[in-house]
Length: 222
Ligand SMILES: O=C(O)c1ccccc1N[C@@H]1O[C@H](COP(=O)(O)O)[C@@H](O)[C@H]1O
Image (cartoon, rainbow, N blue to C red; front, side, top):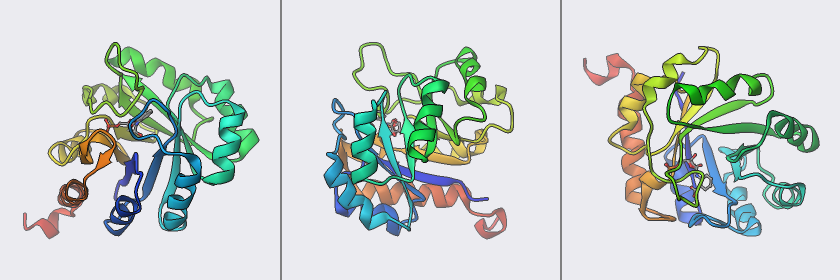
């Protein structure tokens, strides 16, 4: 099955429309105020309406309280929450129960030890997202444009369903897909001309590289 492709940190109708035209299965909005990709929930709701029914709408939140979630669920009506903070399995379960929404839990990874936490979320989250650990001193838990050693994911139980993120771009997405069992890829800064500024040419180049990487072998002429 073709992997999913999530374009994250969208802030303009042009970028949303291009991602949809090129076949994004998920589009993400960032509700973390320190991020250059932060978007007000009411604007995100308008952009989400362009995508509703065409792609999964993902709200990216970091240790949200219920007031934050009430506002986002009301104004954006996401299909999925991406929990990108230190949310415990108990908190994830509470959120799922309260809001009846799919949850993708982001897990920061540097080495095999970082995968130990995965087990406690199995059966609670709908999907995992493996991202690089942020560098020391970074204000951002994600969106740092950094990759990690994807080979550590080989230690995961093969039944763990995950998207891969962190420093993906047109040059490494093929290797990322070939060397992991990711069922989706998630990209943000790799399709930007500056932090928070999506570049339509880079979005196109990423989708072209993704298409090359996922083309059936017989169709590539080999
Ligand atoms: O992009 C951000 O600013 C951000 C802020 C807070 C939490 C998550 C954030 N982004 C997520 O980070 C990953 C990787 O992004 P990148 O491709 O390395 O730039 C992606 O899942 C975004 O959803």
